[in-house]
Image 1 (cartoon, rainbow, N blue to C red):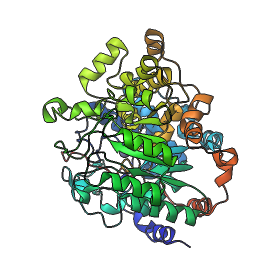
Image 2: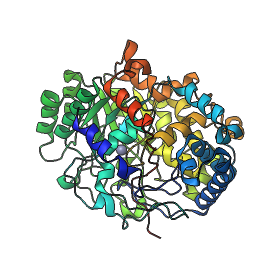
Image 3: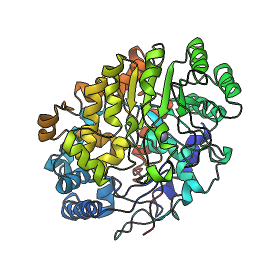
Amino acid sequence: MSDWFRADKDAKGQLAGPREAGLPIPTRIMSNGEYSPLPQTEDQRRVEAALFDLADRFAPRLDMNRRRFLQSSFGMAAAFGALNSVFGTSYAVAQDEIADTGAAAEWAARHAGQFIFDGHLHFVHDAYDWPGILGFRNAARFMQADGIPQRDPDFDDVKFENFVKEVYFDSDTTVGIVSTATSDDPARRFLTNEQIAGDVARLNSAAGSRRLMGHAAFHPGADGWWDALEEAIEVHRPISWKGYTVGDPLSPTSIAPWRLDDEDLVYPAYERMVEAGITNVCIHKGLMPADYATRMPDLWPYATVDDVGKAAQDWPQLNFIIYHAAMRPVVMFDPGFIAAFEETGRMEWVSDLADIPDRFGVSNVYADVGTSFGQGAITQPRLAAAMMSILVKGLGGDHVLWGTDAVWWGSPQWQIEAFRRIEVAADLQDRFGLPALGASDGELKTRIFGLNSADLYGFSGAERTVAHYADDRLSQHKADYLRDGADRSNAYYGFITGE
Ligand SMILES: [Zn+2]
């Protein structure tokens, strides 16, 4: 047996112990260092209170304590009920899902065959020790509520073993792509291209099927970048590329930003990618801190989508997959951002991205929704739903790709549940002509969850079904893990303000 699984088993006593947080969804916004953290808002406090209220009402009927209830699927359903009670109804939640074992089982059975391809996953390498990843703002405790144990995040939370547990055991995710970031300081790099290739091989050989694929980072203009590109092509064979046009997302003084449409610098790399047959180019965009204009006056324009249209037009052989859907703010409770959307129906930088096919006559531009959907789902569900709809309308329902940025945000299960349940508010559908997202297992959501990426990455036949993976070693381990009564950890890794 592989050591990743044994290590996970050994750690189980600890994972169920007092190290854990305990809410089904985060009620604070955290940061992985790609952007700045923010304090809990009044609305988030109300969500938390409403959730505890539901837990205290329904847990005794199910013969559970509060903690157990919050870890169960009842707690997950209750969390979306609590969000509805604070923000207005965006989530479909039936009352009996919170209190009736039959309804909860039915909901789970209904989605058991849903193929989920998460194109945006992270963990850091085993020797990673840059404290910034944990110590952003003293890595404060996540929950301070009564009866919920507290703990600080540590490096193990964001490393391979726990990644496997949270993504494959604690969520419905079927397959995924692990990413990384470029950085001016090598010590901050989450994973090197070589480490990604090694971990992908390690997991797949342990699983006995292809559950994980990997990016290779490329950084035009940085020292040794061309050699690294060649090495990736010759040796590591990534499934797609990952680039950060801002250069270093962890530094407001990044020294080597670049543009996608820079003909002299970047087009030779595109030519090499086409030649190598690795034609999916994933680009981090958006996710700016509130003070971005003053904090990084020269850098922030590189985070917009201004350079996407021309590059996509000049390189129809490549697909440009814009990560975070270019969502401008890190979190949607920026009042100016919300007001502008409610007034115009346009969402900063997301709408610019959605306009590209029309403006440039291209069909090779896609959106990944990592972090943007998740943070919106818990802070402004109304806008999170609208964001998905804007992307579907502009790029097409077959050009929007599921991604969660797990494990920065803990297990991706709460994001999966949020997207299954979310719908665009009727008044927004009417006023701005935004298409509905439809049923949790309807065609559009099923495409976004997995089939779009399956198309893009050439998954064919059985490989794009859950059944294909049902008997692999990872599924067998998961079944053992669930049978042994493992609790979903409900921990969220990231860096929140101390308060
Ligand atoms: Zn990411």
